[in-house]
Amino acid sequence: MTEFEEARRLIANSLRTAFPAAVVDVGRHDRVLWQEPFGVLSYEPEVPQTRLDTIFDLASLTKVIATTTVAMAAVDDARLALDDLVSRCLSQWRGQDRETVTVGDLLAHASGLTTHLPFFKDYRGRAEFERAICTLPLEYRTRSQSLYSDLGFILLGFILEDTGGTSLDLRFDQLVTAHGWGDIGFRPEFTTRERIAPTEVDPWRGRLLIGEVDDENTWALNGVAGHAGLFGTASAVGRFAQTILQQARGHTPLARSDTFRCFVSRTTVPASSRALGWDTMLPTSSCGTRMSASAIGHTGFTGTSLWIDLEADLYVVLLTNRVYPSRENDAILSVRPAFHDAVMAAIA
Image 1 (tube, rainbow, N blue to C red):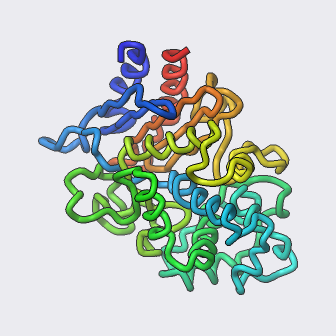
Image 2 (cartoon, rainbow, N blue to C red; image 1 turned 90 degrees about the horizontal axis):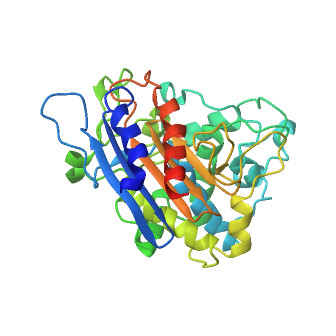
């Protein structure tokens, strides 16, 4: 691991300033190059050391690992089409301003929906959330731009539930079992609590969150939503990334090659870096400046990130709990690109 010494130093030097705990997993489609835990689970005295099997709240990595992957499988199986109108999937999605919005627009963050609203303060469960989002005025003209939206992915979760005949978490569990990804899923078991990195002291719920989803809207949806809710280890996220890299090399573990290519290609939405679900490489993004133009990835609010360079046959997982004890700490924003640049320099 000496080749990753600069990347190791960056993470080690960020402990206590950017996050208390971190786990790194770097590899290729067929092997792991570097796995290492850093730090301790919190800043309290006598807390456990971070381990390779530490479980993190993956936050918005849910969008790509779970929701986008389940959507890709549904499109590949012809149970769903990217040009399906949302109005035909959800009866309350009505209005002239939104009549052309498609499932593909939700995946591309180009539907017109705003980014986030605190629905958890007033609503509980699917029926109330669906009504609130479907009747919300759109913020911009559909496909005129891309605005990252939790709300669009909440609706995607509902649509996938309807098209699959079962809940999103069970659909995802089937994929985990089929591909052997390991410790990753919604609503972690109570018996794994001692392995879970705490997130923040949530002023709304009035307690430190350990194994309870950090995102309040997901909490109001009983822990399962299209935009957040997954928990997992770095090695499980790494095994998922290996499956993506195997897919990119011509194997078809998840979908046909043309379906996969459609999902990982940047859309034609003006001034957007988004593919379907995934973000793509920009030199100003969290992946740094050294990844190829084929790189896809995503970050999570709690301090998680996954980047996969399809051309270089490389994945980089960095899981942290940067929101402990407060979400106000954003020091990770400078750590991420420097870390990814150091990893890419090490394997050059």
